[in-house]
Length: 136
Length: 360
Image 1 (cartoon, one colour):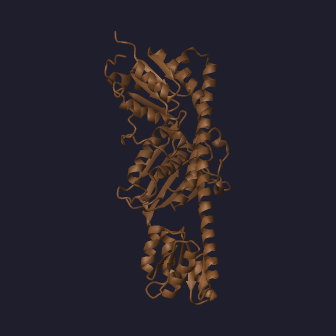
Image 2 (tube, chains in turn orange, purple):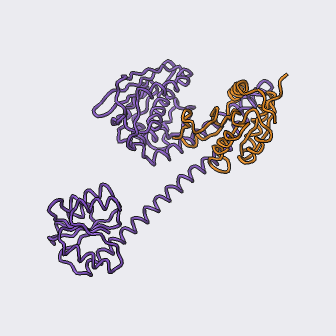
Image 3 (tube, rainbow over the protein chains, first blue to last red):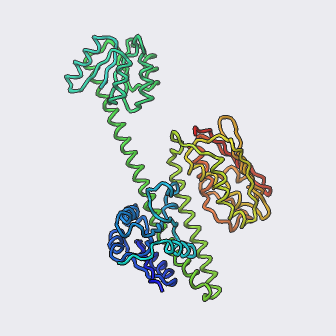
């Protein structure tokens, strides 16, 4: 029996975290929450989640991008799959994240609100791909 | 400041008088050298003689207006005729100084010119600050408006996904309707933001161009699901050798998305949408033709106006912000193209867009 997978939600919206948490817990995942980039990074370093779901616009408009870069620079976290979830596309209608540009090293970009079925499928896919053990 | 005059006496006296006032003055006999210095240093003020042997003051004036429009130009004219001065002012000079002039006259003209420059700088700074504030405001408001809607929609999405089977039918129905109403509100915010962005323009910056033969199939692909759901057939005729058009890809794609989206939305089951792109003059004509419900003749002149939605029994229940065609018109105008709507009520509508070719 494999270990329960830990997923870290970093998002400043309490309600968004509550609904997504309920969805993920129902699937048997262990969910950790953080409302900001800095505390999110601390928890990520301490708890070594198997996957991170990250918002972009928190206190700062591009907070998530910096968190993401920091994650990728941190040994032991660099390979953790990160899903960036944001309503950025629809708030900046002429902004697109060029996924091939390499400057935003997320594994996946999902627009908010998240579609439950799609989120669960992508989470399962990324977790299956990830290295099996990341001891805390 | 820079002084260009082929007359040595004028050059020397300008420098002497103005240096004494504390101005840094560079003098040039040859127009070409003076122009090179203006380009390099962009001084606040340029004094230039209108009549010089190699390159006259009008040519200098024209060149400065083209390359450094912020430089205030005062012309020195030997012919103290109103006609010459008027011509120079029309060509973009701010003021003129007839020869011969006294030191006081020179000082006065220079002070006025510099004052003018200060005003230009201030208004430019204010314009930029205002634009930035406006952009920040729009981003802030939209984020504040969207966040609660997104959070509510996320609850409902999760609720439907996790508990659909256990909910009484009426609760399911109402949640479904709530989802639709939220989607409408989110779409309205999205379109309003898109319009705010589009109205700033700037989509035709040098080098911005769109390869329609590559983008049209993508937009069609994206509309395929909506078309299938509405039982509308999507057809396109796009020659592979179509020239690229001017304009930022996202702007041109937004234009196509809006036109195709409307053609599908205001259609009927079994209807069709035909997109044709052809070379036309120094550009490309794009026609989006639908066999839909059409637009009443008296509403047709207003379809591009903000928040205008055609209200007929047939459009009841079709969601829309009333901003889509306003966005289209703003994009086309920014790209210096044209857009036109032709329609027959009950038979269908055709939008014809022409966009100038762009260098690939």
